[in-house]
Length: 157
Image (cartoon, rainbow, N blue to C red; front, top):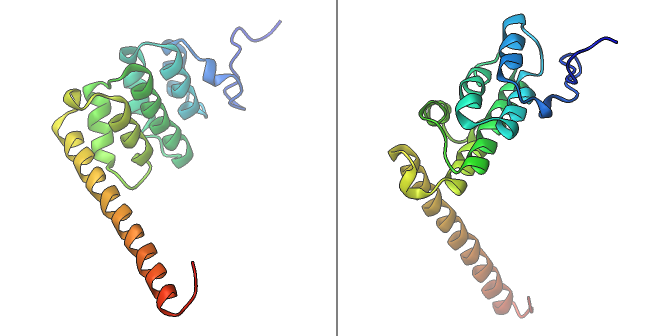
């Protein structure tokens, strides 16, 4: 007999299947581990409104790995719902690009329609698009210069 839950909070096994926000709330209260993993499960198995406050709370965990999983949960929520809550947008904006939130921000920009994005995210979309285009042009110009240099020296590319 034993456990009533198929989720092992000590090892993290089965937490991607978490579908009960109250179970995650209780885990927060007792200081359980693997909360970042659990909120990914909530993103997969619950409504955005149910998962959002728990994802935001997990984004503030002291364990950087679990915080990273919480940001993965935000990206997953954006992928599955095509939207985020105002609290999730605010948490991603507060963390900013270039760090633990970078992939979640890019997922949001990819899966949430541009017209539904808050202004800061629209600016990030423009910024990333311009930077990606500049990087592409820079790489192409490096290739062209290298090809020209080899041609001048009598070598074929």
